[in-house]
Image (tube, rainbow, N blue to C red; front, side):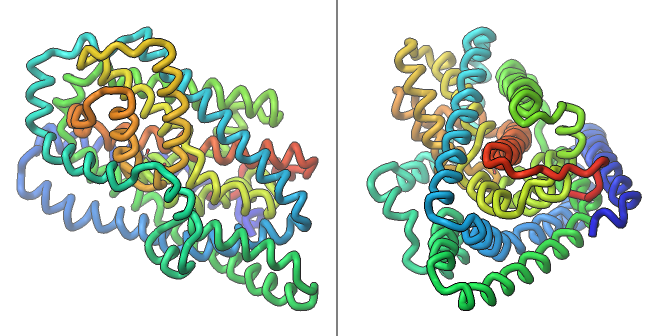
Length: 437
Ligand code: ASP
């Protein structure tokens, strides 16, 4: 499908990138020159927001059928249980390893830069006062999220339809895994029509994603404009060093660690890897959501990197829910930053606990905007930093959320490439980037 329209697709990429730049520049400019004007608020609420939301909703709309069809088909076409177990184990190990490396990179940088020590106490007091009620709500949320045996029990949904309707991705994935495994265990003639039906669902969903991506330039511009036109840029000045530390750590992971693994383990050079992932990265950046980006991630893996359907369909939905390199790194940096601000000493052993906690909690983070905040509060509490301290960073969270979602999804894509390679499945990479996603 994509191969027949290379021209339009390449142009679409450029359009999305230009739209991102245009939306960001227009948003920042209107924030500076027309900050509080009612006209700007009207444009944001009645033009930029709706366009952005429609794009976002089109992507969210296909997530449930896509996850069900792709996980079930992925698992069923892996064939036997032993192979499913092997692929599953490899996938989880790569998730854990890359996430742990991300946190270590983040902690190394925050220990060197020490952004918390230079934060003006007056700014600290002002930020605490301004965001304390919002922070209080997140603290309550974190209590509801407490880890325990129930976390495990809750993975098994009581009702798969309710899980899907409530956005309980792990529950939906669990049901799809079971369903896929069951299909491999029943008679071939009974399984075949179900598989054909799912194949049809999958193809139709891909077409809808294609429609959504045509709207991507407008949607991306709308989403970025609504964030930047309302954003309080002054706060960036006060938290500058912290923001720079997070962004630097994310960039080192994205363009250093992930690029090197892609080059030396998957055998794909950084230019090819990133230019073929452009739509994926831009979608993640503008939506701040791994779940909303999942359709684009699957499309990118299959069409731009030739990842076989059974691997992409299995690894990527799991990755969108469980594998969050950027989020874990952000959690680690923020815990140390707040510890520095509040003068809490975290020795090496405690920092190791921070690494482990960040890796584990990132698995439980929902792939939605600011999904990590309640779990971040939990990690803070565990190492003795006041959870309300997140009041300090809430004002810049949106920007950091956009940035951390990029390595979150890029690492999912990378994992699918590594797993496919380790299974000796050929990656049929097109000679040039062909599709929109
Ligand atoms: N927005 C992130 C994601 O969807 C989650 C988070 O870090 O809050 O991947």
